[in-house]
Amino acid sequence: LRRARFDAVRRIAGIASARGAAAVLVAGDCFDSPFPEEGTILKAADAMSPFGGPWVLLPGNHDPAEAGPLWDRLEHAARNLATAKLDLRIARKGEPIRIDDASLEILAAPLRHRHDPVDPTAWMATSERRPGLVRVGLAHGSVQGFGGDGESTFNRIDPRLPEMADLDYLALGDWHGTLGIGRRCWYSGTPEPDRFRSNEPGHVLVVEIDEPGALPRIERVPTAECRWIEETLEHSGDAGALIARVEAILSGSTPADRLLLDLTLAGEVDIGGRARIEARIEEWRARLCHLRVHDGLIDRPSDEDLRELRLEGVAQAAASRLAAMAGNGEEEDSEIARLALRRLYLMQHRIRETG
Image (cartoon, rainbow, N blue to C red; front, side):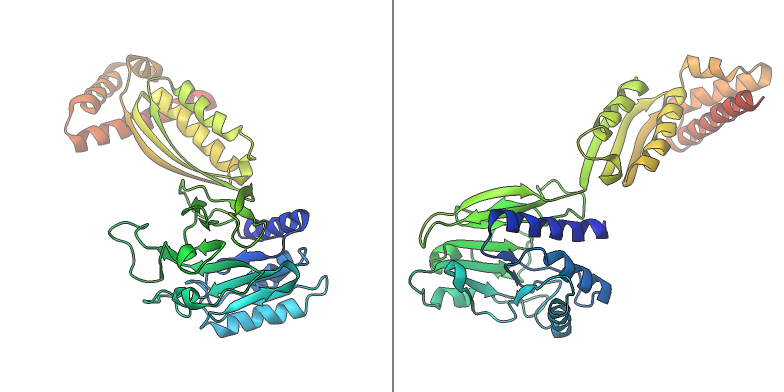
Protein backbone atom coordinates (compact mmCIF):
# COMPACT_ATOMS: atom_id res chain seq x y z
CA LEU A 1 0.00 0.00 0.00
CA ARG A 2 2.88 2.36 0.69
CA ARG A 3 4.22 1.70 -2.80
CA ALA A 4 0.73 2.29 -4.23
CA ARG A 5 0.72 5.79 -2.71
CA PHE A 6 3.95 6.74 -4.47
CA ASP A 7 2.61 5.23 -7.69
CA ALA A 8 -0.50 7.41 -7.34
CA VAL A 9 1.69 10.53 -7.08
CA ARG A 10 3.53 9.44 -10.21
CA ARG A 11 0.19 8.94 -12.01
CA ILE A 12 -0.85 12.46 -10.98
CA ALA A 13 2.39 13.78 -12.47
CA GLY A 14 1.59 11.94 -15.68
CA ILE A 15 -1.96 13.29 -15.81
CA ALA A 16 -0.72 16.84 -15.19
CA SER A 17 1.83 16.52 -17.99
CA ALA A 18 -0.68 15.02 -20.42
CA ARG A 19 -3.27 17.73 -19.71
CA GLY A 20 -0.77 20.58 -19.83
CA ALA A 21 -1.59 21.64 -16.28
CA ALA A 22 -0.39 25.03 -15.08
CA ALA A 23 0.34 23.54 -11.64
CA VAL A 24 -0.46 20.67 -9.31
CA LEU A 25 -2.02 21.82 -6.04
CA VAL A 26 -1.87 19.51 -3.01
CA ALA A 27 -4.28 20.65 -0.30
CA GLY A 28 -2.45 19.36 2.77
CA ASP A 29 -1.45 16.07 4.36
CA CYS A 30 1.24 15.32 1.84
CA PHE A 31 2.72 13.16 4.60
CA ASP A 32 1.08 11.17 7.41
CA SER A 33 3.47 12.54 10.01
CA PRO A 34 5.78 15.53 10.60
CA PHE A 35 8.63 13.02 10.92
CA PRO A 36 8.64 10.73 7.87
CA GLU A 37 11.61 8.52 7.13
CA GLU A 38 14.23 9.88 4.76
CA GLY A 39 13.35 7.23 2.20
CA THR A 40 9.73 8.41 2.19
CA ILE A 41 10.78 11.99 1.43
CA LEU A 42 13.14 10.91 -1.35
CA LYS A 43 10.51 8.68 -2.95
CA ALA A 44 7.92 11.46 -2.77
CA ALA A 45 10.25 13.90 -4.53
CA ASP A 46 11.10 11.32 -7.18
CA ALA A 47 7.41 10.51 -7.78
CA MET A 48 6.60 14.19 -8.38
CA SER A 49 9.51 14.76 -10.76
CA PRO A 50 7.90 13.59 -14.06
CA PHE A 51 5.76 16.75 -14.09
CA GLY A 52 7.88 19.71 -15.11
CA GLY A 53 5.50 22.38 -13.84
CA PRO A 54 5.16 23.67 -10.28
CA TRP A 55 3.90 21.56 -7.41
CA VAL A 56 2.29 23.75 -4.74
CA LEU A 57 2.23 21.84 -1.45
CA LEU A 58 0.17 23.00 1.52
CA PRO A 59 1.00 21.93 5.09
CA GLY A 60 -2.03 20.23 6.66
CA ASN A 61 -2.93 18.91 10.09
CA HIS A 62 -0.71 15.82 9.72
CA ASP A 63 2.28 17.79 8.39
CA PRO A 64 1.78 21.36 9.70
CA ALA A 65 4.00 24.30 8.82
CA GLU A 66 5.57 24.24 12.28
CA ALA A 67 7.23 20.97 11.22
CA GLY A 68 9.95 23.03 9.57
CA PRO A 69 12.57 20.26 9.30
CA LEU A 70 10.15 18.15 7.24
CA TRP A 71 9.70 20.83 4.60
CA ASP A 72 13.41 21.72 4.64
CA ARG A 73 14.24 18.07 3.99
CA LEU A 74 11.76 17.87 1.11
CA GLU A 75 13.17 21.02 -0.50
CA HIS A 76 16.67 19.59 -0.16
CA ALA A 77 15.54 16.35 -1.80
CA ALA A 78 13.93 18.29 -4.65
CA ARG A 79 17.11 20.28 -5.29
CA ASN A 80 19.26 17.17 -5.36
CA LEU A 81 17.23 14.90 -7.63
CA ALA A 82 19.55 13.24 -10.12
CA THR A 83 16.87 12.40 -12.68
CA ALA A 84 14.91 15.64 -13.12
CA LYS A 85 14.37 19.17 -11.90
CA LEU A 86 11.45 19.53 -9.51
CA ASP A 87 9.67 22.88 -9.26
CA LEU A 88 8.48 22.75 -5.67
CA ARG A 89 6.56 25.57 -3.98
CA ILE A 90 5.85 24.92 -0.30
CA ALA A 91 3.18 27.23 1.10
CA ARG A 92 4.59 27.81 4.58
CA LYS A 93 2.78 31.14 5.06
CA GLY A 94 -0.69 32.47 4.42
CA GLU A 95 0.09 34.53 1.34
CA PRO A 96 -0.40 34.58 -2.44
CA ILE A 97 1.76 32.42 -4.69
CA ARG A 98 2.09 33.59 -8.29
CA ILE A 99 2.38 31.22 -11.26
CA ASP A 100 3.33 33.86 -13.81
CA ASP A 101 3.37 31.62 -16.88
CA ALA A 102 -0.29 30.76 -16.33
CA SER A 103 -1.62 34.11 -15.04
CA LEU A 104 -2.55 32.26 -11.88
CA GLU A 105 -2.54 33.43 -8.28
CA ILE A 106 -2.90 30.87 -5.48
CA LEU A 107 -4.02 32.08 -2.06
CA ALA A 108 -2.58 29.49 0.29
CA ALA A 109 -3.76 28.93 3.87
CA PRO A 110 -1.38 26.46 5.52
CA LEU A 111 -2.04 25.08 8.97
CA ARG A 112 0.64 26.25 11.37
CA HIS A 113 -0.31 23.63 13.94
CA ARG A 114 -2.19 20.34 13.95
CA HIS A 115 -5.20 21.98 15.59
CA ASP A 116 -5.85 25.63 14.78
CA PRO A 117 -8.82 27.26 16.56
CA VAL A 118 -9.01 30.11 14.03
CA ASP A 119 -9.95 29.99 10.37
CA PRO A 120 -6.62 29.85 8.47
CA THR A 121 -8.31 31.29 5.39
CA ALA A 122 -9.67 34.46 7.04
CA TRP A 123 -6.96 36.66 5.49
CA MET A 124 -8.08 35.82 1.96
CA ALA A 125 -11.20 37.99 2.17
CA THR A 126 -9.08 41.12 2.62
CA SER A 127 -6.48 40.21 0.01
CA GLU A 128 -6.65 42.52 -2.99
CA ARG A 129 -7.49 40.87 -6.28
CA ARG A 130 -4.93 41.49 -8.99
CA PRO A 131 -6.41 42.17 -12.41
CA GLY A 132 -5.93 39.58 -15.14
CA LEU A 133 -5.14 36.69 -12.79
CA VAL A 134 -7.20 33.60 -12.10
CA ARG A 135 -7.59 33.49 -8.32
CA VAL A 136 -7.55 30.10 -6.58
CA GLY A 137 -7.68 29.36 -2.85
CA LEU A 138 -5.83 26.41 -1.32
CA ALA A 139 -6.80 25.30 2.19
CA HIS A 140 -7.06 22.36 4.55
CA GLY A 141 -9.84 21.88 7.07
CA SER A 142 -13.51 21.28 7.70
CA VAL A 143 -16.21 23.34 6.04
CA GLN A 144 -18.51 24.72 8.74
CA GLY A 145 -21.76 22.80 9.01
CA PHE A 146 -20.49 19.89 6.92
CA GLY A 147 -19.28 17.60 9.70
CA GLY A 148 -22.52 17.47 11.74
CA ASP A 149 -23.23 18.36 15.36
CA GLY A 150 -20.11 16.65 16.68
CA GLU A 151 -17.67 18.22 14.23
CA SER A 152 -14.38 19.61 15.46
CA THR A 153 -14.00 23.29 16.32
CA PHE A 154 -10.47 23.23 14.89
CA ASN A 155 -9.31 23.96 11.34
CA ARG A 156 -12.69 25.38 10.34
CA ILE A 157 -13.35 27.00 6.96
CA ASP A 158 -16.29 29.22 6.07
CA PRO A 159 -18.26 27.66 3.16
CA ARG A 160 -18.91 31.19 1.82
CA LEU A 161 -15.18 31.74 1.29
CA PRO A 162 -15.27 31.63 -2.55
CA GLU A 163 -17.71 34.56 -2.53
CA MET A 164 -16.12 36.40 0.41
CA ALA A 165 -12.61 36.24 -1.08
CA ASP A 166 -13.68 36.53 -4.74
CA LEU A 167 -12.12 33.17 -5.58
CA ASP A 168 -12.56 31.52 -8.95
CA TYR A 169 -12.01 28.18 -7.24
CA LEU A 170 -11.25 26.84 -3.75
CA ALA A 171 -9.24 23.61 -3.50
CA LEU A 172 -9.78 21.89 -0.15
CA GLY A 173 -8.09 19.03 1.66
CA ASP A 174 -8.88 17.03 4.84
CA TRP A 175 -11.94 15.04 3.72
CA HIS A 176 -10.65 11.78 2.19
CA GLY A 177 -13.35 11.49 -0.46
CA THR A 178 -14.06 13.51 -3.59
CA LEU A 179 -16.81 16.00 -2.81
CA GLY A 180 -18.16 19.24 -4.26
CA ILE A 181 -19.18 22.07 -1.91
CA GLY A 182 -20.88 24.44 -4.31
CA ARG A 183 -19.86 25.32 -7.86
CA ARG A 184 -16.45 26.76 -6.97
CA CYS A 185 -15.29 24.57 -4.09
CA TRP A 186 -14.23 20.92 -4.00
CA TYR A 187 -12.47 18.39 -1.82
CA SER A 188 -10.30 16.32 -4.13
CA GLY A 189 -9.89 13.52 -1.59
CA THR A 190 -7.01 11.13 -1.26
CA PRO A 191 -5.65 9.88 -4.61
CA GLU A 192 -4.96 6.42 -3.16
CA PRO A 193 -7.55 5.19 -0.61
CA ASP A 194 -6.24 4.15 2.79
CA ARG A 195 -9.34 2.89 4.57
CA PHE A 196 -12.74 1.25 4.14
CA ARG A 197 -15.08 4.16 3.52
CA SER A 198 -17.53 4.69 0.67
CA ASN A 199 -16.95 8.42 0.10
CA GLU A 200 -15.52 8.22 -3.42
CA PRO A 201 -11.77 8.50 -2.83
CA GLY A 202 -9.15 7.67 -5.44
CA HIS A 203 -9.32 10.65 -7.81
CA VAL A 204 -7.47 13.76 -8.85
CA LEU A 205 -9.47 16.79 -9.99
CA VAL A 206 -8.58 18.42 -13.28
CA VAL A 207 -9.87 22.00 -12.97
CA GLU A 208 -10.10 24.30 -15.99
CA ILE A 209 -10.86 28.02 -15.63
CA ASP A 210 -10.97 29.96 -18.89
CA GLU A 211 -10.53 33.44 -17.43
CA PRO A 212 -10.91 35.38 -14.18
CA GLY A 213 -14.51 35.14 -12.98
CA ALA A 214 -15.41 32.15 -15.15
CA LEU A 215 -16.96 29.09 -13.56
CA PRO A 216 -14.54 26.18 -13.26
CA ARG A 217 -14.98 22.98 -15.24
CA ILE A 218 -14.13 20.06 -12.98
CA GLU A 219 -13.29 16.54 -14.09
CA ARG A 220 -12.64 13.59 -11.79
CA VAL A 221 -9.80 11.43 -13.08
CA PRO A 222 -9.23 8.04 -11.37
CA THR A 223 -5.82 7.57 -9.77
CA ALA A 224 -6.28 4.67 -7.33
CA GLU A 225 -4.52 1.39 -7.84
CA CYS A 226 -6.19 -0.43 -4.94
CA ARG A 227 -9.91 -0.83 -4.22
CA TRP A 228 -11.31 -1.01 -0.71
CA ILE A 229 -14.67 -2.80 -0.69
CA GLU A 230 -17.10 -3.37 2.16
CA GLU A 231 -19.62 -6.11 1.47
CA THR A 232 -22.32 -7.75 3.59
CA LEU A 233 -23.66 -11.09 2.36
CA GLU A 234 -26.66 -12.92 3.76
CA HIS A 235 -26.49 -16.70 3.58
CA SER A 236 -29.84 -18.00 2.37
CA GLY A 237 -29.19 -21.72 2.59
CA ASP A 238 -26.99 -22.05 -0.49
CA ALA A 239 -23.27 -21.87 0.26
CA GLY A 240 -22.51 -22.07 -3.44
CA ALA A 241 -24.50 -18.89 -4.14
CA LEU A 242 -22.66 -16.99 -1.41
CA ILE A 243 -19.29 -18.20 -2.70
CA ALA A 244 -20.27 -17.17 -6.24
CA ARG A 245 -21.12 -13.65 -5.07
CA VAL A 246 -17.67 -13.22 -3.53
CA GLU A 247 -16.02 -14.66 -6.64
CA ALA A 248 -17.91 -12.08 -8.72
CA ILE A 249 -16.30 -9.33 -6.64
CA LEU A 250 -12.86 -10.86 -7.09
CA SER A 251 -13.31 -11.20 -10.85
CA GLY A 252 -13.96 -7.48 -11.37
CA SER A 253 -11.68 -5.03 -13.14
CA THR A 254 -9.32 -4.64 -10.18
CA PRO A 255 -6.74 -7.46 -9.86
CA ALA A 256 -7.30 -9.50 -6.72
CA ASP A 257 -3.87 -8.61 -5.33
CA ARG A 258 -4.92 -4.93 -5.43
CA LEU A 259 -8.24 -5.55 -3.70
CA LEU A 260 -8.93 -5.07 0.02
CA LEU A 261 -12.19 -6.65 1.12
CA ASP A 262 -14.09 -6.17 4.37
CA LEU A 263 -16.59 -9.03 4.28
CA THR A 264 -19.50 -9.49 6.68
CA LEU A 265 -21.33 -12.82 6.61
CA ALA A 266 -24.77 -13.23 8.14
CA GLY A 267 -27.54 -15.81 8.23
CA GLU A 268 -27.82 -19.49 9.09
CA VAL A 269 -25.67 -22.23 7.58
CA ASP A 270 -25.40 -25.98 7.90
CA ILE A 271 -22.07 -27.49 8.87
CA GLY A 272 -21.27 -28.71 5.38
CA GLY A 273 -21.93 -25.27 3.95
CA ARG A 274 -19.74 -23.65 6.60
CA ALA A 275 -16.88 -26.01 5.78
CA ARG A 276 -17.11 -25.03 2.10
CA ILE A 277 -17.22 -21.33 2.93
CA GLU A 278 -14.30 -21.49 5.38
CA ALA A 279 -12.17 -23.36 2.85
CA ARG A 280 -12.83 -20.67 0.26
CA ILE A 281 -12.09 -17.91 2.76
CA GLU A 282 -8.56 -19.26 3.11
CA GLU A 283 -8.20 -19.30 -0.68
CA TRP A 284 -9.45 -15.71 -0.92
CA ARG A 285 -7.10 -14.62 1.83
CA ALA A 286 -4.17 -15.90 -0.22
CA ARG A 287 -5.35 -14.15 -3.40
CA LEU A 288 -6.36 -10.76 -2.01
CA CYS A 289 -4.19 -7.88 -0.89
CA HIS A 290 -6.17 -7.96 2.36
CA LEU A 291 -9.25 -9.76 3.63
CA ARG A 292 -11.10 -9.04 6.86
CA VAL A 293 -14.05 -11.31 7.68
CA HIS A 294 -16.78 -10.62 10.22
CA ASP A 295 -18.33 -14.05 10.71
CA GLY A 296 -21.93 -13.66 11.78
CA LEU A 297 -23.03 -17.04 10.44
CA ILE A 298 -25.04 -19.19 12.84
CA ASP A 299 -24.60 -22.95 12.55
CA ARG A 300 -27.82 -24.89 12.09
CA PRO A 301 -26.83 -28.56 11.65
CA SER A 302 -28.98 -30.36 9.10
CA ASP A 303 -30.04 -33.99 8.86
CA GLU A 304 -27.60 -34.30 5.97
CA ASP A 305 -24.79 -33.09 8.25
CA LEU A 306 -25.56 -35.88 10.72
CA ARG A 307 -25.68 -38.48 7.95
CA GLU A 308 -22.34 -37.20 6.66
CA LEU A 309 -20.78 -37.94 10.05
CA ARG A 310 -21.51 -41.67 9.54
CA LEU A 311 -21.62 -42.32 13.25
CA GLU A 312 -23.25 -45.22 15.06
CA GLY A 313 -24.44 -46.10 18.53
CA VAL A 314 -23.39 -43.83 21.38
CA ALA A 315 -21.49 -41.48 19.05
CA GLN A 316 -24.59 -41.02 16.87
CA ALA A 317 -26.73 -40.34 19.93
CA ALA A 318 -24.23 -37.75 21.20
CA ALA A 319 -24.16 -36.01 17.82
CA SER A 320 -27.97 -35.90 17.72
CA ARG A 321 -28.05 -34.39 21.21
CA LEU A 322 -25.48 -31.75 20.18
CA ALA A 323 -27.63 -30.91 17.15
CA ALA A 324 -30.65 -30.42 19.39
CA MET A 325 -28.68 -28.21 21.77
CA ALA A 326 -27.36 -26.17 18.85
CA GLY A 327 -30.88 -25.33 17.79
CA ASN A 328 -32.75 -25.05 21.06
CA GLY A 329 -30.36 -24.63 24.00
CA GLU A 330 -29.27 -21.58 25.94
CA GLU A 331 -27.14 -19.16 23.96
CA GLU A 332 -23.82 -20.23 25.51
CA ASP A 333 -24.70 -23.93 25.32
CA SER A 334 -25.85 -23.53 21.72
CA GLU A 335 -22.56 -21.95 20.72
CA ILE A 336 -20.54 -24.71 22.41
CA ALA A 337 -22.69 -27.37 20.73
CA ARG A 338 -22.33 -25.77 17.30
CA LEU A 339 -18.56 -25.57 17.72
CA ALA A 340 -18.36 -29.20 18.85
CA LEU A 341 -20.38 -30.40 15.86
CA ARG A 342 -18.30 -28.32 13.49
CA ARG A 343 -15.07 -29.83 14.82
CA LEU A 344 -16.53 -33.33 14.74
CA TYR A 345 -17.60 -32.85 11.14
CA LEU A 346 -14.16 -31.61 10.05
CA MET A 347 -12.40 -34.37 11.98
CA GLN A 348 -14.51 -37.05 10.31
CA HIS A 349 -13.79 -35.59 6.88
CA ARG A 350 -10.05 -35.57 7.56
CA ILE A 351 -10.16 -39.19 8.74
CA ARG A 352 -11.94 -40.25 5.53
CA GLU A 353 -9.56 -38.23 3.35
CA THR A 354 -6.45 -39.76 4.95
CA GLY A 355 -7.79 -43.22 5.51
